[in-house]
Image 1 (tube, rainbow, N blue to C red):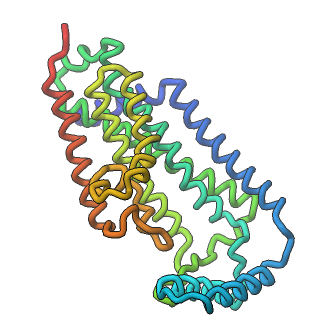
Image 2: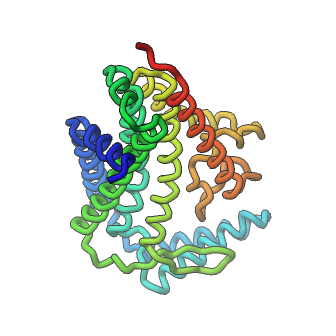
Image 3: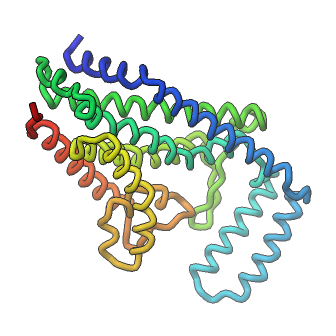
Length: 315
């Protein structure tokens, strides 16, 4: 077994032997259970009006609105909505019906909770060694500081992956138990350029999870950098969570300025490029945001590596 794999195993032992780790997993499962229960309860309170009648009435309203519009973009948007509703009626698809995929797609919004739980671990990985005084024991061993840092980073990403798998599996199971597994092969219906397309529900769900994983990766890497900078677990966790909670609000507040597109928080949510969404600024593109995120990721890794490998440890 290589020295890196031994270090990774050692870091995993540190993570999973702590009661806090399992408490966070339990908290994630509880959150998904509450979300599923609230969705089921809320659906039971809904109107019992026939969904076909609702869609027919909605299309009549949209047709009336369409006659009074002159802007091509607005007209195209309404025409697409009318075509989509007509497709639902023609193929007997109730777009408002709860299915197991509704639970899975909604659970993607809880990945921010996965991010927060992983950031707490990441921010503690380096800083805790200094707080406990165990960093000296690590550094006197044969492994280089680079390998030690890499092992901590890989172990943290492994924990993040575990939380993601648990979130997806729990939401899928909850949806199947509450709504049945009959909709597992149901298509994902979208419209683009006036043409209705049927896609895969599992592919759509994985796309949402995949985009959310990007923000998870960036925030975890940022937490590692902060952990290396502040040799205090509490400060590392506090600063990391502060950036998570205030970053998006800051970008929204400054969206009127062109330079806001260069901020990390303006690019970290790639779901803004999914169909039916709009980017923070009209000139932003998916390729631009990916380029910015790669640049930030490289800077975070470089700064964290420099701070951990080059700084002296007090005797």
